[in-house]
Amino acid sequence: SMSDPIADSPEHAELRATVRRVIADVSPPDRVAELDEAEVFDNELHRALASLDVLRLGLDVGDVRDQLVAIEELGAGPTSMAAFLISHYAAVGLGYG
Figure 1 (cartoon, rainbow, N blue to C red):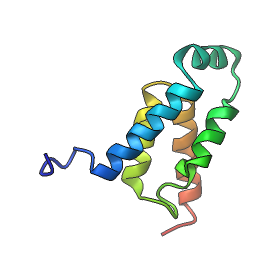
Figure 2 (spheres, one colour; figure 1 turned 180 degrees about the vertical axis):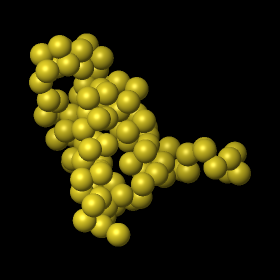
Figure 3 (cartoon, one colour; figure 1 turned 90 degrees about the horizontal axis):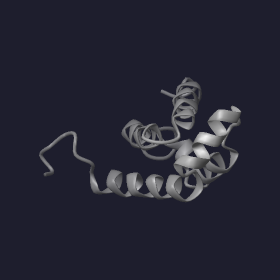
Figure 4 (spheres, one colour; figure 1 turned 45 degrees about the vertical axis):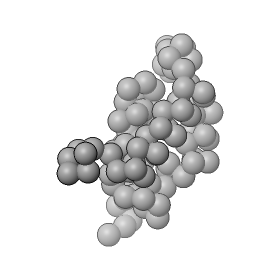
């Protein structure tokens, strides 16, 4: 319900579905496992997220709650990209506010 502060707004639900779909398409679990095993950064997923403006969330697009949605979805699968995004948002966020 809309009164639940934890529930996604329609916009957040849409972002969540989009990020989830991109992860499923670009970096399914077997690919994530291979890259993690090889300790290789997932450039394809990074590019896909960048094309959706996920790297700009909370900066000039969306807000911090959008960042959390993206991180949550990545945390359920490609955790190394979730960790990268946390560092990315922290670093670029220092120049704002």
